[in-house]
Length: 149
Image (tube, one colour):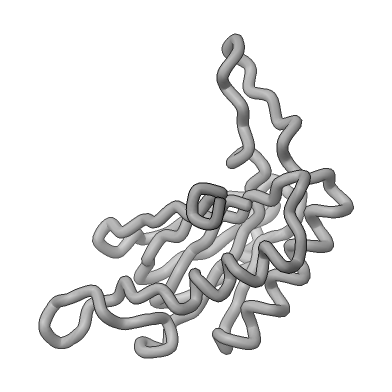
């Protein structure tokens, strides 16, 4: 599993010109699901993500979590996070989870995240999406297999 977490002041996603997900302050999260990922792995990543303290407190220190700032999450799947570019110039996506498995795990992650964060918006699995965001900082964190590996 790979998560790219961007602290944002706002973010949205459009499909065919229509906004399908929109948030204010919080995290815009790109989710890459690998072929070997499970609900247990997803649970660890979600727990780490929602408890991450990367919002500034009154002293300007990154000390506050999503819950502390009433933050929201926009979660979008992106299988291209599993691009393997070691050979040639055309990426291989062989390590990405298959569509049925990845979509089921993505839906699980959305529901699980709602247990921690009241506002969880999403993109549409497998759709061509246009993502807009204002990255706050900028502040971007990547969680991948090295975190728990």
